[in-house]
Image 1 (cartoon, rainbow, N blue to C red):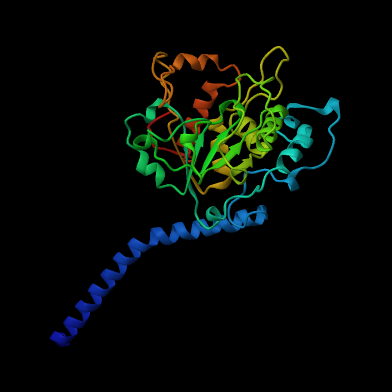
Image 2 (cartoon, rainbow, N blue to C red):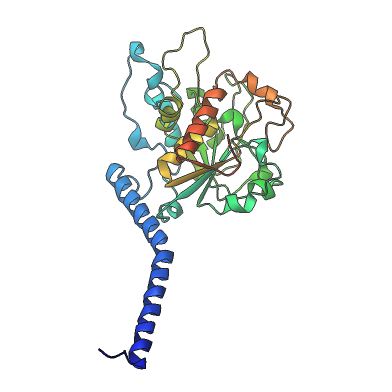
Length: 331
């Protein structure tokens, strides 16, 4: 058999180059295709278990979630009281939700097929990390309590999608107001809900029953306020932290911190969860606690209602299992 002609050689060479380009193209496009397919699978799966949201499960409480049932006094276990359930405080929840304009996720969030979220803690580990731009690049940025952004943009960014708080921890500085932020209210006691109604309808606010005086008004508009579903707190406490359900009456109850509650919320609604600012220096108790204040780690010992050691163990487990990803190093 004779040798192939120059024309045949050129054609085979052309086919080889074409196949090589195709292979390179496939290598470049395949990861994106697989990620998109995975996100659409998650969207389909979530839609089948939660019909309120077509794409992402809502972590917020609506009037339709209130059961209108009475709990006998002898059945008021820890699982049926605030902050883990709405059952024993339904009239307070109804009064609050009747005064709010919305209980849904913002439409802009449901338009994102694969939701990438970050929970930004308030730890001093954020100082001088220059993570601001990276934090702002996430679809959803969840912040905690009164952690400020104005003046700290280089390290923590300035985007805030959701801010979790309760009366004693709510941010009240008007200079920190953001019209694009949803205030996620976390009630720990019925009095918290009464306070929220009072500030919404502009009644006189009482500070009795609070461990710290709450503000007499809030900087957010009505349509920016949501109530966190107590089931999110319940999941944080008993599914994630494994806190004890039976606590001796002489001991204070144990609650998750706002940070762990925020992570529980993110795991409910997001396809991918990252965290930053959750690392603390437990060796040097004189080290700085927050990125924005001079409080030291010694103040952590005063947290009677939180199990910080258990939370640090949980964070390590979530990271090692790739359930969450950390921007600020090991926990």
